[in-house]
Image 1: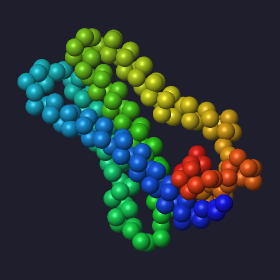
Image 2: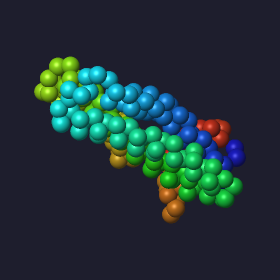
Image 3: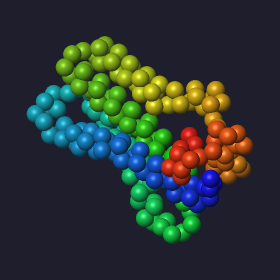
Length: 182
């Protein structure tokens, strides 16, 4: 079976990153669009300072998430055919992580904002805390735990890109198989 070259791996990893971002960016855009309309509703003028700051955090973090998820596509256009795909993959992975953090903040604060308006601050804070914990665990915690338990089947070379280990379990049957690293 043919091993992937560094260029082929970078191409595959970039496509996989963009596919993941496509899923997230739709949700971010819907949330961001909704948040942009909120100040124009009649009840917004009645909000206190704390709720306005909560809204501010939700709005700005949704904007940051949008920027982070769109950045890889924009940079790909700028760096097209410049031979910098591996750099773009590493950078896109970082933007994806930052975008996920910003999205978690926006979702949590948006939910807190609405629940505080509908019910009370205590319920809003508890719900937001639970949502933040759930997002951190499902998006980052489980993966970090797997990574720290040595569930890798490959090692990294000096530039941070994955190279297959000599074990038979890391042999790929097709270029689309994922080695668990980006």
